[in-house]
Length: 464
Ligand SMILES: NC(=O)c1ccc[n+]([C@@H]2O[C@H](COP(=O)([O-])OP(=O)(O)OC[C@H]3O[C@@H](n4cnc5c(N)ncnc54)[C@H](OP(=O)(O)O)[C@@H]3O)[C@@H](O)[C@H]2O)c1
Image 1: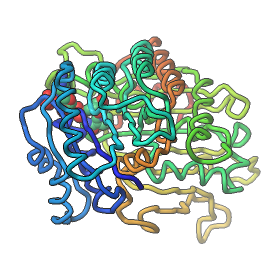
Image 2: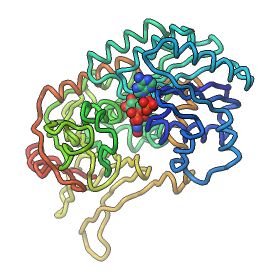
Image 3: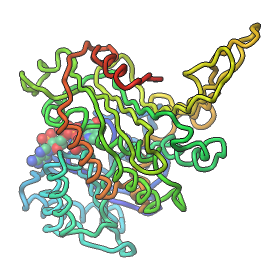
Image 4: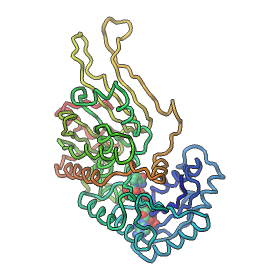
């Protein structure tokens, strides 16, 4: 593992506070980087100690005060306006000083924790100041650039940003990230599927009845009204997390489960996705949220029926459902297998499915039919469970810590290739063009009551 200077643009923001700094602390605490410096940059007139202290409540487990103080000592803050070129020249001096002081080799990770509208300008200014140079895969010290999701707000914007970045940097330096891809259990999906004979031969339209991908949140938009009102649920999570999960479920077997091999197979799935139908919802009270338009039609809930039009998946519906302020927080995938040709009197219809739980618990559960004790042939469903946190680490590493570690190692499967992003935006643009009806739903409910009609229309029975 090499040393690294982490340069975070947007260090006074929510992502740095809740995810990035805790991830950096975790990397340092677990000695995942030999030596490092953290350089935070944003508009705010603040200092690094203040920003770091705001992250205390977001550290998992107890804090090692010695590591905490050491981390603080490696971190500096530079006030900077994304639009001012001179500020980037000043930042470069600051970065060089701290690298010299801490004896770092000049490996640099530039993390753009800012809205996608800034990505092009930030990239241009980083390049113009000479903070990062265009380099090939084996050129050292390395310079890597990390772009948060969502990459753009529609297909046209994503293409513009990508063109802009490619003018300055090589593809091997560019990380368009989706932290979901680094979750331990998500990495496990492909492995479990491809290495178990009880699943792989069944993973197709002959045996799979439908696939359900659900990402429900019990919280609202919190203080992110300006961002959310422009994006909505479809662009915020369907475009990235949910379609990436769908691609992982649907992909063909890669020769290995790393880097370009996985990216290529994921990309092949998204090229063949079509949108059949859907409904939108908006939680009651959304229009009164701070920085939300009073007549906003932004969806905070979406349920959609998609298909993958290839020989493996033709005819299998993929149901996606996500929303804010729902009655529970969960991210799950259900692969529902077809019913066997059952001649028994009591043939159950809703067992035989694999649940992949991602959040908050992680694990696999296979729901099977067994005989109800004491009866001759009454059938009941039972679960065979694999609980990840019970069997392995109770505190698996934070997805963002794995992400940063992977980028330091130069692992590219955590980065989404541009054609994947492009195809995901095409799907999202298609969903939006279909102008699904928008219904209001109560907070802490399971979505709009009109979801029932949608379910009936398509014969959907949600199993999560
Ligand atoms: N928050 C999350 O949980 C989350 C999760 C996944 C992805 N993301 C993505 O991560 C990115 C950042 O999200 P966020 O929630 O952290 O946003 P945020 O809280 O609004 O923070 C934005 C940051 O950008 C800085 N900034 C904005 N305009 C600037 C300018 N002209 N010059 C210098 N600094 C400027 C802000 O600095 P000042 O505050 O000093 O003005 C702040 O540090 C977004 O792309 C978002 O989609 C966020």
